[in-house]
Amino acid sequence: MLKLNSYGTRKLILDISKTRFYSAAVPKRKPESETRKEPKKENESFMANIFRGNLVSKQVFPYPDVLTLEQKETTDSMLDPFQRFFSDVNNAARNDENSVIDDKTLDALWELGGMAIQVPSEYGGLGMNNTQYARLCQIVGANDLGLGITLGAHQSIGFKGILLYGTPEQKAKYLPKVASEQVYAAFALTEPSSGSDANSIRSRAVKTADNKYYILNGSKIWISNGGLADVMTVFAQTEQIDQKTGEKKDKVTAFIVERSFGGVTNGAPEKKMGIKASNTAEVYFEDVKIPIENVLGKEGEGFKVAVNILNSGRFGMGATLSGTMKKCIEIATAHANNRTQFGQKIKEFGTIQEKLVNMNILQYATESMAFMISQNMDSGSQDYHLETAISKVYASECAWYVADEAIQILGGMGFMKETGLERIMRDLRIFRIFEGTNEVLRLFVALSGVQYAGNHLKELQRALKNPSANLGFIFKEASRRATSRIGLGGVDLSAFVVPELQESAKKAASCIDLFGRTTEEVLMKYNKNIINEQIVLNHLANSAIDIYAMIATLSRSTRAAKLNLPTAEHELNLTKALANQATERVFQHLRKATSPQLQSENKLLSTIAKKICEQDGVHSTGVIDLN
Image (cartoon, rainbow, N blue to C red; front, side, top):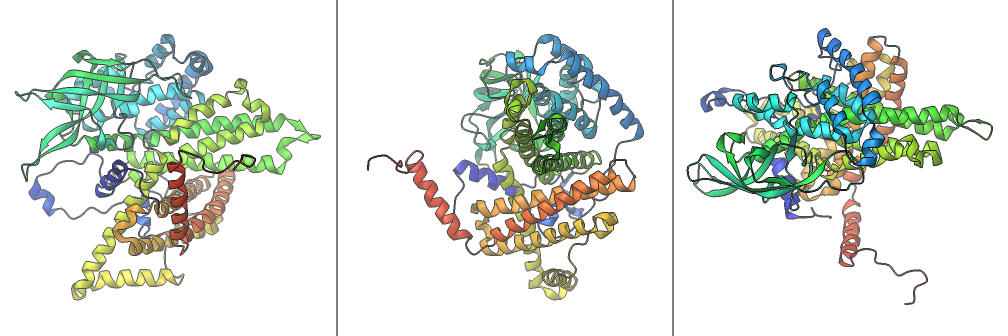
């Protein structure tokens, strides 16, 4: 079996599986006595519950619609100014060529309010919610991902911690600056020794004897806006005393750091494959004197702050990349409609039709996920972190596929700079890496879901020890398992979809039933050692991702049909096609997850991988080399 590749990554996954990041991002603190009296809050995450084979439909059916008419009108009024900014002021090709965005363009973006979309109006921002922000992100994604990184690094993660965790005093001091005073923000987490593993950072902040300041020393790498930002959310190790044991331990603390504090410098902009227009730099901290009131959140809880900032910002990536995909599809479709080969338009060729269809299916699902999540967040949901992780993985991989296929449809022309597709392709590559690599996020999805299912199994085990007091619960679980295994009962989605989608809904329901049974089976087989079974976990994660895509599109296209939208028939067809494809993939992944041959196959893979690493690469004799 392939093991986790380092102690640091293993610890990260353990931290994730132990911490309920699908619960409230910023829970409200309550007195201990009051907390004890409250009944346990049920997890409303659709994805968390399907790991138990259980349907909790609140977040997915009907498709959310949370904006008021006024909010929709406000958003609509911003679309044209945003689009005109990109058509009349910004020049994505020039930004890419020069590896910088000129001051005139950035000034216009600030004046438009583009750097303060989600800052409350009382602090000088536009005061938009997540869904409104997502709609504007689509325009950004369709036009310039490099500029989008500058914008996103500033507000999706740069000052997001102040919005989530800031005290009233911190918000009053910093939000007006980052909203309207052209003060850039950045999120400084990554170090040479810590990429995905935030707990392994080495930057250190030491509290002064008078307890009024922390002195920060260390460095961060690959920081977006690192050379521009005057306000940064910085994470460092701090010595904390365990209140129960009195033991001293290093724990990560988050800080709001101003460049004006002194001792904050940065290196030259990095030379990158893509998103060249964005500023990415190493940032150095030397004896930076941080006031104690600039601790963000609680001391020692910086890891939670970092994860929740990233969790709450990931939905924006799905919206942004749905816009990018739409642009790629428009370029490819225009070419297919006009290009003639062998005496006919290439749009008539089955191969080209298949490409265009698959590209559109993926764009529709990506967009459906993004706006389902954003509207759940805006409605007050706190159980969305599995969904945002899934959205990030799906969007980044689908966008890469769509851009690649667009280039293929254009042939040689797609390879030329003139179409802009080669720039999009380069820009897209980073999205599978940053804000949590897709590999780590797959493990996060699978392990979080497995833990939730495992806790439920423990609850059942406890009930069986005292059956007379838990007969209702035991009979309910026994009945659910029995009927599911013989094809009766189980998940039923028929009431949630229009008649045209009944067959597709049955396929999705069968996937959910099998998914729940498979999760339970692998839990029983591996128990706590499931954390070391990455291949099994990846099969579960891939199945979960496809199931969420099916559910999001079933819900959205049902909405389109019920509203009699002019695009309803097309949306229904996209949903049916996705359900056909996704069901096949889900069943294949779940078969592999429980296959008797899996361990032997993984052992073979592990043997091959070890030899490759021992030989520092390819280990085979050349065909015509002398022995």
